[in-house]
Amino acid sequence: MSGRRRAPRPAGRNTRVWAVAGALALAVAVCAVVAFALLRTGTARHTASSKGGGGPQSSPMSAPGGSERDLVPDACTALSQKVADELAPNADRTAMSQATQSDQHSECAWSLFGTTRRQLTIELRALSAEGGTSATSVATRTFGQEWESDRAGKDLADTVKVRDSRGVSGVGEQAYVVYTVDNDESGEAVANARLANVLVTVHYAGGDDTEPLTSSDATNGALSAARDVVSKLQSQS
Image 1: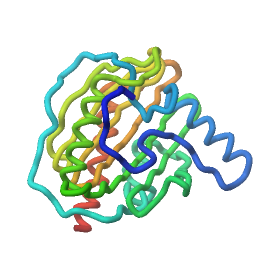
Image 2: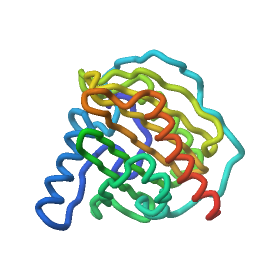
Image 3: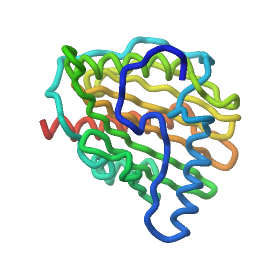
Image 4: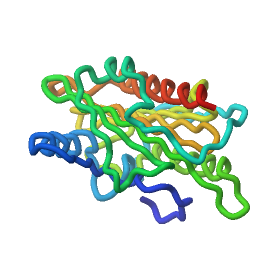
């Protein structure tokens, strides 16, 4: 990450550690998830070194505030099965390590490998108030910092380039999506949405043979998942 001072955030945003409590085969599969989907260097979450990308730079839209939350649901159940099947059909679902899970943080991944490769991850974070700053204000500030970082492509591997980035309306109170391509072989979209003090972050990556997931397919898929999770959160308010 850059040298700028960032707002504290729950663990998990900057690390991708898959937890496997089962057979050796599952452990191997999870390791493959890391090798395929992250395509990253160091301890960066999904963005990186100061490499700008083309495409729109519009600011994420903002809508009336929602209710703050002290906890988030399990990310593995926050996404509907229908959307998961559409984006990563027949994929293996893996909950993140319990060491990084808490009432305020949850992550889950859906992974599919073969000629068609797909990797979908959902991360939910409920940010807390800091001193005299409300939890929603902390989340808004963090969202803005991550939007700036993601569209600039900070901490990306040298082979990964930002190809598109734009603010999005109609997904929570604020949202954006960023599309990157790794070595022209794998495409990934990151959608980040804010609902009051909760951040919903979706990664959707993959390709077919040596062709990357297209910008349209990747961004539409990531936004579809983010919209589905946000809708569920809103229904629980």
